[in-house]
Length: 463
Image (tube, rainbow, N blue to C red; front, side):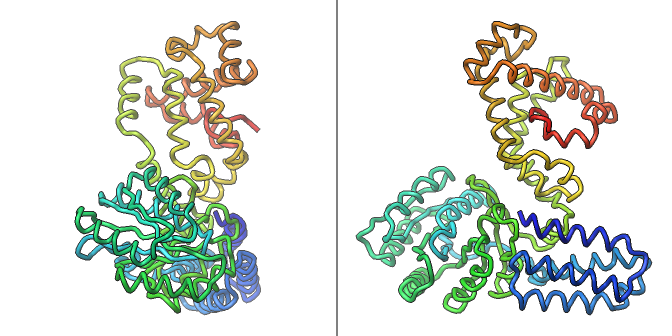
C-alpha cells in the first residue's frame, strides 16, 4: 500500500531526523523531496502546493527552529499536516459511520462501474455484522448488469448478510422502495443499497442515483472510488460531490496501488471524510480509516494499532489458549498445531498485510519474500500436512522414506519439499520450547533475531 510514497518519505524522514540544525538549504531540499514524492504518487497539484506551503510555514516557526531536535520536530510537522490533509481536523463522530436513525438505517453506495461497489457492500455488511452486531439486508438496483445482482447475492451470503432479490426488468427506485419496506417489516437494522455505475460519469446515472437518494433518504451516502485511478479518482469525486449530498468516501484497492495519491486528494476535493479503505480482496478486507494512523504508515512509521486489531480478529483465542495449555502440560507442539499457526497468518491478510503495518525498517528487513510466493508456499505447506495421517501429524518421527514418498505424491510436491517442511517445523518446535520455558532471549536467538525475518515467517522458503 502506497509503497513508492512511503519509501521516498521514509527516506526524507530518516535524513531530517539526523539534522542537528535546520538551515535554509536542508529545509528547501526536504520540501523539494516531499513535493516530488507527492506528485509522483499522483496527488493533485493544488493539494501538493497547499500541503508544502503549510509545512514550510510551520518549518520556519518557533516550534521547529527553537527545538532541541529540529529534525525530529520537522518530521512531527509533516506528520501533523498529513493527518490534517486526510481529515484529522474533523470531529471523530463525523469520521464514524452514522446509524443514529430509526431502523433500518439506509446506506447508499455510489460510484463508477469497476470501483468495487458490490464487493464493498458485502465487506461493509460484514463489518457491521462483526463490529456493530447489526442485522443487515443488501439489495442491488443495478438493473443494467444482471451479473451484478447475482454477484451481490453471492458476496452477501459470504459476508453473512441477507439478500433482497431484484430483477433486470424492474425500475431501480421501485426495487429500493420494496427493499426498504421489507427491511422495516422484518426488523433489519441496516439496508445496504448497491447502485448502478457507468464507465464514465453521465447525466442518466447521476439522475438515477439522485432519484434513489430522494426516495430512500439514506443516513449515509458513501462515494466508492478506486484509488488506482489516480487523478481521475479526484475528478470523479468532485463530480459526485457536486451532485450528491455525500457523507463520506470509501477508497478501494488501496493495497494494489503503489502510489495512492487518491487517499491524500479525495478528502481535500470533496470535503468529506474517508470512512473506510479496502485493503484486500477477501470479504474481511475493509479497515476503518484513521488519518493519524495512515499518516504514520505513509511516513514509514507503521500502524501497530491496525496490526493488533488484525491479530484480534484473526486469532482464535480458544485455540490459542488450548495450545498454551497443551504446551504447559508438557505435550509436544505437533504438525497440526503448526498448520493452525500458518492458517492464522493467512487470515490476517497474508505477508503483505502484516508488512504494510510494520515500521519501514522492519518491513524492509522482512520484505524479501513476495506476498504471492509466500501465499503459494503456505498453501503448499497445508497441502503436505493434509496428506499426512493423524498419527503422522502427531508424531513426525514416524515419517521415514516410504511415508515421505507417499505424502509427496499425495500433495503433488517433490520429496525435498516434505523434508524442508519437517526441518522448518523442527525450528518452530524448538522456538515453542523456548517460549514454554519463558526464555524470551533464548527464543529470539532461536529465531536468529530480526535477520531471520528476511526468509519470511516460519514455514516460508529462505532467500
